[in-house]
Length: 181
Image (cartoon, rainbow, N blue to C red; front, top):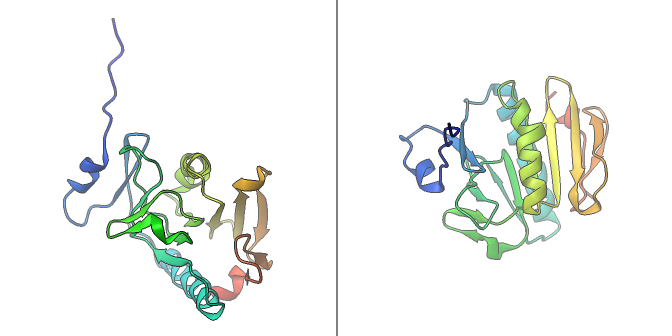
């Protein structure tokens, strides 16, 4: 007896969801998203401000976007994500729907419901798609796990109290503990 075939969803299925319902699509599977808590939003807000200010101050061309911002990391219609923060330096990847291709830098804030997604599923997706740098900010553990995919090195883990240098921007250092005082 053959195994039941699993349904493969596409970006059209994401856009067909009822208004207000948020989900991501990875490898043709839909993952519903829970609403973020206050600390999650505080971290997103503060990080966006720090990164945006750095880009503006240094006359950079990169753009920084908070979720919900559509990222289509692959050339197919089987992946759609809304990273908490996306930094895109190649403006040719941007259109009215979002970012087509891999952002240069993605930051995800871990929520209890997103732990497995952020550390495993999205980590693999972002690595395969060509994201240069991926930060996983974990408020529960008060640490940041950083992947520099271009270097193909093991991740580096920082405590919230440590200054963290952004790999794609020379001169940008962030101490997460200072953002949530």
